[in-house]
Length: 302
Image (cartoon, rainbow, N blue to C red; front, side):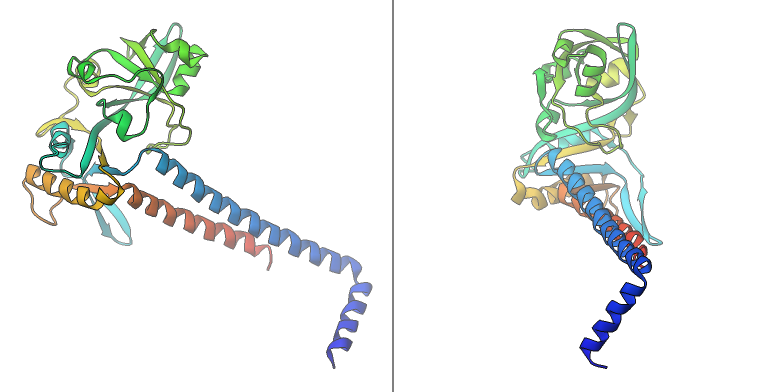
């Protein structure tokens, strides 16, 4: 049977079974469309995550307590010692770490923020003035707190865009007002630019309030933020001098903390990760998501 005869037979079969042929074609069209759509969803998610990670700062390095260990096909975090503010100060010593531009230790706690008769449950970030630069999170209205505020443990706060809108309507109107955090009065000196997206904890990056680390320790959580070797922090944000300095800065940070913690190579009780490391992990996760979505959609073609 030649090719022309085969085509003729196929056309006769289609004319004789129009409904079946139409349904088959419809199924193929829908299935192909589903594959394309779900693959686009996965790729869109990857692009969004990449954009969010890149927007949190430039040349960023994160220092976390504990050491990531691989075992049984998954990573587990072994925490033996908490990081401290004194660790952050040692990292910020540019005479020892010349490839480090700025350092901002960070503590996060859930608090109640109230103004008038309204209140919201929100994340409070205790940090130092360098946070504004390191995390690329300046004030849109008013100003960020200063080193003098931090040294004096001043009761000042910078609101995220979301609580400023929720409590005041117009975020600019929040500046100069007095709010209460866990019942303690604070003066609003600024409102952060609106970032959008999610932070490390999964919540909105705009649903935060930022205050001096010393204020958080002394005025809100007195005695509950102490650790061996000083004031405990959740993690440390570091900005390298430039992109080319990131690897050198990571090496300097690693040896600085080993000396402070009096540990040797392969005994690290901390994890140092660059922005690119986090992007790589996020990319692996979204690639798996894209493959799974494509496989699910592909079933419709079977």
